[in-house]
Length: 78
Image (spheres, rainbow, N blue to C red):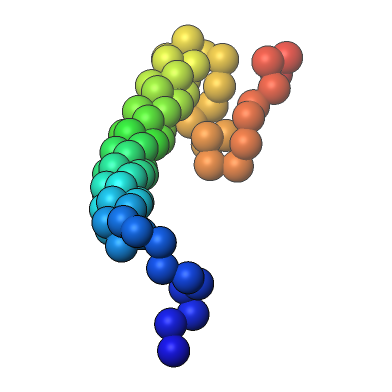
């Protein structure tokens, strides 16, 4: 028994077209997700590099002790 309801003329063609469109949209969406994940990973890496560079500059400027990088921020009024 077919549970899809009454058959209309051209219904199978419309269903196939809709399924193909859905498949294409799904593929595009998956590609978009992959691209976004890659860019998020790249951004995270860049942020980590930036934080390291800022910490290095603060140490060089004498604003922050190298030991404080592990446990938190050093106070500016030492």
